[in-house]
Length: 237
Image (cartoon, rainbow, N blue to C red; front, side, top):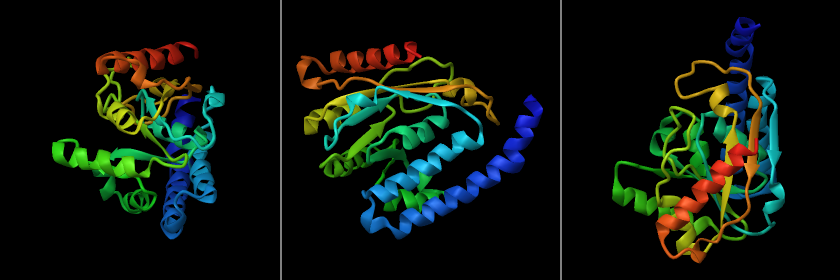
């Protein structure tokens, strides 16, 4: 069954996912003047969920009651796999903007669609560019528009939650926005950073309670508290 599943991924699932990605990219580009509309968000959710449907990966989502309609948040998530992006895109029911690595801009259709959707590209090796990216994302976080950040900066290589960088927390502090921890489990087992294909495994996405960073006296204390909340959510799976 394992080898049949692998063949299925390359022969059937992957071509369908590529077609869906191109369609979704074109849809997003055409409707870019309404990039924060519900119809665009629903199309993007459908595209992302299709990855899990076509790969037969069950996704369980808990904690959505912690999200208040109309409130902007900074969502902070651990980063286990490429699948994390689709799990969040597909199952987090809010409009949000990614801070994403600049290399994505070069992907045909996808890079243009991401720009049209209002996502912000970050040159991680350039401090000045990174600062401008933070300023650009902050301007969009109004009227319930949120952002999602992977503060580890890259996918885990061993399944453990790495050190959190400060960028996500600076946005929350600058704008006085609550941080919501997202805990993803199962994506590492399904497709870790070295994997060439997906291994069947259940996925769990847990949305934690909002955290007010201003109640902490030191930035490192706030970062540590959010990281611990992310880890605690993983352990609930």
